[in-house]
Length: 287
Picture 1 (cartoon, rainbow, N blue to C red):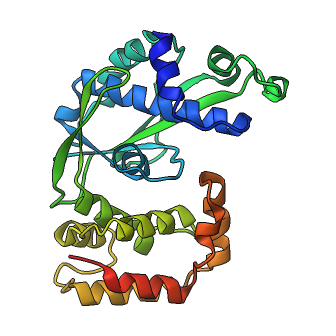
Picture 2: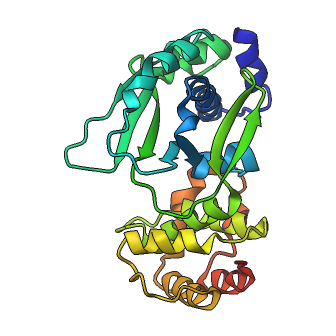
């Protein structure tokens, strides 16, 4: 079955060892999606976030994690029941990965787990002509985090998407307006601290370029859940634009660029980033 994975890797333009690592991570993400699908995971959960946008809508940046949300709240959701099937699916393709749940130190609605496999072993399997293989620490691991929100905000809408490799499979995911609502929520509410997450801004531009409308009821539910607005707040297109413009005025765009540069190929796409740029393109937001 290595030929299937080799076929999946062929679409990547490889220039260095980092490209090889990222390509392998992205393929493993898709293998994990296939395994979760075949385990019945998407009867209860939906895919969203940056990796969902990359795989199904062509976002041109690397995204590290797999983000999922239950379609209805369930505090007793058992993530572990999918681990054995997921491991079996992944290892049946000649990969050697284990799955382990991340222990939470505090009560949380998010359940997390990691897929882990040895980096050098898998690079050798698919890129046996790597010149700087000696620079990879033998203990280095490929680590793919996946998280499930067990208490999702209301009013998301969903769609089915399909992939053919490594096997034909179906994924339940947030539709584009709900995905965009989630990203706008991140732009507004993510606690960036001293490091602005430029990836949120990069994705925001992508959605606007796609002319994606915003699922406003879902965005409002997210903002209420975060305590950013009260339930009686009148969230309209105009009030949303005002909120976003106030947020853009707070951002250090040079820091934001530094965050996203390792995840993209075309650095020149960031040259225009400024308060004026983001305020102007936000005029085109659709509800």
